[in-house]
Length: 402
Image 1: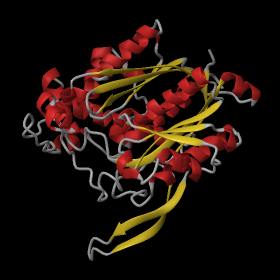
Image 2: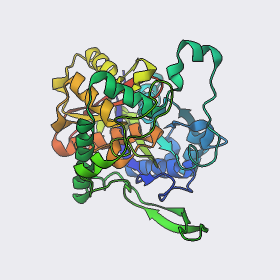
Image 3: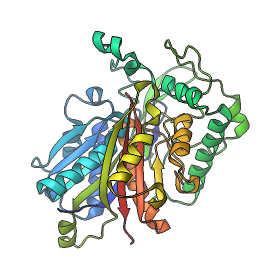
């Protein structure tokens, strides 16, 4: 069987939703920008890309068409390049990379792109109606499917004894690690600046205007965060029947709403050799698992052991971990349950400090773990996510030296 190798990665900076640089930028622009520059970094002709897999958490509101196909065309790929939108909510970007790799390994494709994009600004918060319509039968048998993510994070904290103090302490660590990574330029190898227009609102008059901006870094990090400041934040009111009032989850210990896109070029090992390209890493495997919807955040504790067992590995064999920080409560529980070493996990911060554009994050984490793993001389890395609706996903990558 062919091996699928990842030869390049590129992403936008992550902009604050609603208030940030991408608040008026269409998903196809962000997705196309990431795809275009990932292809350019690979040094290949865009016409060689057979298919673009684009993860998106809310594809139904992102565009009137297939966001993957739109992004491929925006990126300069010819009409012969196909596109498919992938939706497994927070794992969409990771799933897109896995599907691109599997197509190469089993179906004879030479080159594909795995990517992810999300505009929370224009879809979830921008006027498109994403009301959660319920279905009568499912509402009777599994009402937690319609539970908000905040509610599930509260339940995980309560059910598994993850204190508010631990959550705030972890959130502070995430902010500090991201600040240190930014100061040392560790994200510069990933981000490609994107010039766009941003909507600004005058606080005094309410007047709206469009201004030219360039998003060339991650906007969400708060390097001046303190433990005292985090402790002073009031819990978010979660609503719902099971969690009438928040106890643990705050704006400080949750992932931040943000917009952005990320892409990886995936090709067969034979094609990489033919093109004289040195890969960043090798896709080794992917596993998915389901858990109760009301504790969706614990998904990695099922998906990770499943992945490792299939490959004859243990937690100790993994040199680097990227565990998406949807909420500090579920991140801490997963780390505790899996026995992850904090020194090897989210070493440059995570979604609490950087942001979490749902469909994009898995693709971003894949690119990041390959680049950071190469810096550290790591051999094996795992990207793992919890997923809305009650699932977990995990991807295994072999990291190659420069």
